Image (cartoon, rainbow, N blue to C red):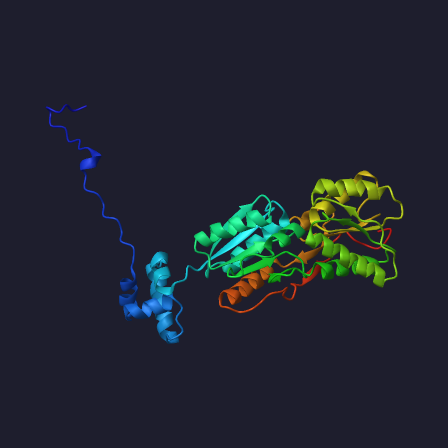
Length: 353
C-alpha cells in the first residue's frame, strides 16, 4: 500500500465530481416537443374539451416520449380537484369484499387515485371516523363496501354533502348502491340442478347478517317454490371451508340428499371433502354447486360448477355512479343489479352420476 509520503494516487470518493442528475421533464418540454403552447398542454393534461383531436394526439405523444408526469399538487390548485376517491371496506380476507375492492381499483385506474380505509368492523362511529379521515385527504367521493345489515345501518344518516355509493349491500338497501344479482344467480343454479333430475336441492347458507347470503337463500327458495318443492332447512356457515365441511358431514348422513347449493365456493370445497370421506362421491352420488367462481374453482376435484360474479363490472358501475353523484346528479337508491353467469363444470350431474 502506498504511503502518503510516497504520493498515493488514492482520492476519497467524496472529492470526486458528482454526476449531474437527469432533470425531470416539465410542461414546457412537452410544449416544445409538441409544437404547442404551455396553455395547450395544460388543457390536454386537465382533459379540457376545447382541444383539436390532432393537437391532443401530438401532446399525448410528447408526454409519452418524455415520460412526463403532471405535478398532482399543481394540478389540484388549477382545477380545484384532487382526482382522489376513498374506499371504506372491512372483511378484506373474504373473497367477495376483496374482489369488490380490486374491481373498484381497476375501474379507477388511470382516472382517479384511490385511498383505502380498512376497518375491522363497520359501525356508525367507525364509518364516520373513516369518512372524516378520507375527507381530510381531499377525496371527492367515497365508495363503501357494505356486505352486512350492520354495515348498511351504519351508512344511513351519513352527511348528505359527502358523495357516497355503497356496493355489495344487496339490491334493496336505502342507499345509492350497486350490487350483484344474488337471487338471480341462486335461481339459475337451483333450476340447473333440478333440470338434471334432482328432486330437491339443499342449501348451505351464509351468516344471517350477510345481505349476499340472504338474497342467495331467497333465490334458492323461490326456485324451489316455483317447482312445487318444499324448501328443506338451511344449514348456515361462516363462508369458510371448515363450515362447509361440517355442513357436508350433516348432509352426507341424509340418504335422500342428492344435490347441494353452497352460497360460496369455499364452503362448496368443504362439502365435497366431507361427502368424499362419507363415501358419497361428488358428482357420482351427490352434485354440488358453488357461488363466486374463485380462481381455484376450476381446479377443485372435481372442477366446480358455480355462479360467476362480474366484480369488474360491479367496480365500473360503482365508479360511474359515484362520478355522477360528484357532478351533482341525484341517485338515492339501488341501481340495476349486475348479472351473474352459471359456469358448468364437472361437480354436478343427474342423480346417480
